[in-house]
Image (cartoon, rainbow, N blue to C red; front, side, top):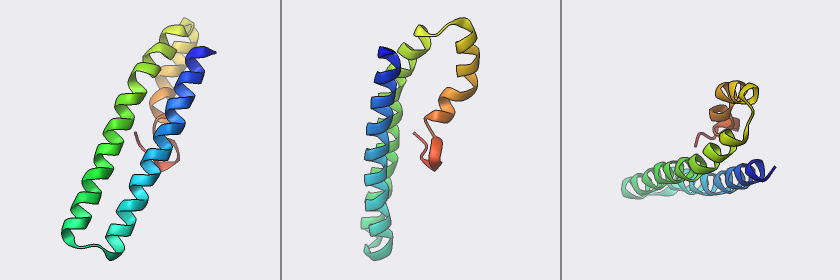
Length: 89
């Protein structure tokens, strides 16, 4: 339960940071200069990288806490959870 909570907490924080970066990128796309758009796109890429890096240790801890059967199922879905809803970490 502890490992799952940590995974869920990081996942929620990641969604918030990526949504904020996405919103800033959309704003720049609509009314920003080419330089503004470039910075916003770079910030979005960095947010995605930071999210993936934050998710990695809690995913590893969660995976270690699973039974062999659960690990088999996790192999099929854990990365999908990290990119659900069109937000890829």
